[in-house]
Image (cartoon, rainbow, N blue to C red; front, side):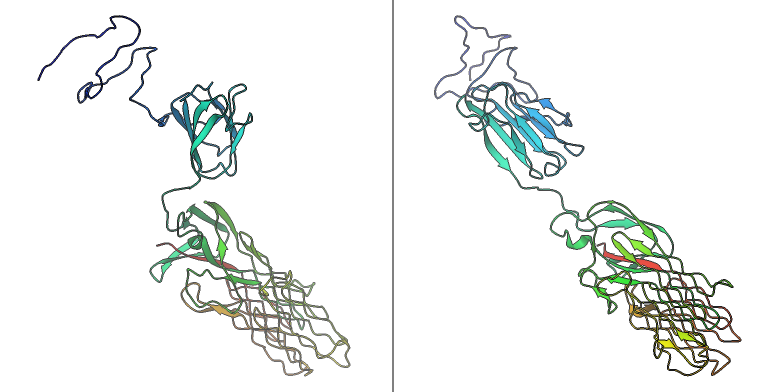
Length: 457
């Protein structure tokens, strides 16, 4: 084998240096060496053919001018901008790709140099597809820059599950996280699912229960339960309450979601005889209304998630509060118990009626002197992996002028009523139960709760 070793090759005449000929294989350089063209020199027959050198060290975030033979990563997450194409000559090539998958929100504008065209038209082009990448080649002055490659596929690494912190976190049924909030906080999502499993694995199950209303005094009505709302994701199997919405709530992006847990309504002062209104609980777009307060003697119960019970009087029947206020579907609660009939009453009733619960109205007054009635029943869910009843209404007051009973609260934390010798019993903490009414003093409603459940592996 012959070998020629020289320090430099220069032209003998003219301006072209030819190495090799037809049918000849020429190897330039060896492993570890670099073969480069001199300053201002050009080449044909080898090197770049329809490819670009990607500028990975210079991510573009604002308007810039591209150079022939280069590819760019355009970050439009903070706003759209323009890529100016260079003055094109035949064979020039430029590429660009959506760096942050945000072209759909903030477009990238492509502008040709001077009067040159893009695809035969003298106008700017707009890239508006998420994850888009394009390659332009300058053909001639008739068509100008032609798009020879266009990918509209947004191919990303898959993140199969969402991840979050906040509240008291437990693992149930091996693959599911449950976040329980018994007070205010934040559900902090560090990542959402991306890829084939999204959006199914970004839909969480939730239960949002508001604070129950306080029971009234002096023959007071029972407090209404806090509004009860539940939505069950198809990816989180458990036995939900009858008030389950058709689907859970989709989490669309990472970030902190504030949680509000409503306090129970206060016990009544002396005067007034009415209990306090329960407070709302909130998770994202889901708001459960506080329970209506139980009326004091002669007063109507208040509207709310569930309605408060009417307070008994010797001269007339006021109405109990309505439930599901404001309205939701499924309904978040039921009304307080009804008197036997509206209008004036002969003789002393001296008894209150029960507040409404999530699934049932408070029991109506049967017309028996001094007989208070029970609160409406709540509902049971296994969202925390154990069956727990919540959102029961408070019982209505009994009176010594008659049977002097202590009517029970509804299942799900409703407080028992008092009578002429006993105060009402408060609604159970973190159930949204209504407080019991009493001849002496009505009781506070129970605080609410927020529970979030999702698949994490």
